Length: 428
Image (tube, rainbow, N blue to C red; front, side, top):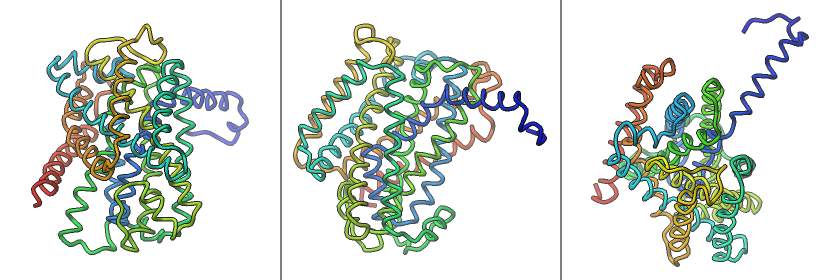
C-alpha cells in the first residue's frame, strides 16, 4: 500500500485501517483456538518427551511441521468460508456414507485416546499440585459439559482464547532453564549437536512422528472447519480468516518451541529420561527452579482442560456433519440432543479409562499421536481434492504450491507412519 505522511493525519485512512482491524477481530477465533488446542496435555507430554529424548534437533522437524500445519488448516478454513459447508458435510456429500463411516471410526478412536491422555494428565498433575486427583477429573467433566451445554458459541470462544494465554507459562519455564539459545535457534535451520547413530535416528522417527501427530491432527482439520462454520463467517471475509489461520499456526508452535527448549536444556543435556509431561515438570525443578516446575505443571492442567473441550467438540461436530444431523453451540440441548450426547458419552468413556490406576501415559500419548499421523493422509486426500475443485472453490481454488506441498506432506507422513510402525512393533 502506498501512502504519504499526510495520510497519517487523514481521517479516512485511519477509518479504513480501523475498519479492517475490526473485520479481522470479527472473524478471529476458530483457527487460533484449533491451533492452540494442539498443545493439549497429550501434546505437552509429547513435546516434553521429544525435548528430553532428542534434544534441540527435533526443532528442525517442528519448523517444517509448522509450515504444513499452516497450509492444511488454511485449506480447511478456506473450504468452509467459501462454500459455507463443513469439511465432514462435504466429504459425505461428495464421497459417500461409506467413506464417512471409515473416517469417523478412525477419528473417534484417535479422539478418545487423546481425551483419555488429557484426563489422565489432569489426574496426575492434580496430584503434583496437591489437588485430589479423581474428584478433579470428575469435576472437570461435569464443569465442561455444563459450560458447553448451558453456554453458547461466543462464551466458548472467549473462554478458549483466555485459556490460550496460560501457555505463556512455558516461555517463563524455558527462560528459567537458561538454555543455549544459539543452539536452539540454529537447530531450526538444520539439526546438529548430537550423535546421529541408529538408536537416535530410530527415536527421532518414532517421537518425531508423535510430534507431527500432536501438532497436525485429524480432529484439528475437522474442528477448524466446523467451528468456523458455527461462527457463521461470511464468504466475503475469507482473506481475514486465512490471515488468522497463519497466525494461529505460528502461535501453536511458538509455544511448542519453548516446551521443547525447557526440557532439552535441562533433561536431555543431563541424560534424564521421562515418560510424561508431569515427570518433566518434576524433573526440571533441580535445574530451573520450583517456579519453573510449578508453572510447567499448571500449564499441563490448563492444556488438559482446553484439549478435552476442543477434541470432544470435534467428535460431536464430525458426527453431526458426517451423518446429516444438526448441532452447534448456539443451539440448546433439546435442539441438538445428539450433538451434546455424543460429546458427553465420549467424555464419560474417556474418564473411566483415565482414572484407572497404572495407565502408561507415555505409551498412550505416542500411540495416540501415531494414530493421528496415520489418519492424516486419508483426511488430507479428501481435503486436497475438495479445495482443488474449481467448480466448488471458484477463484479460491488451491495454488500449485498449496496442492503439491500438501500432497508431498501426505506422502511423507504415510511413509513415516509405516517406518515408525515397523520400528516400534517389529523392532527394525
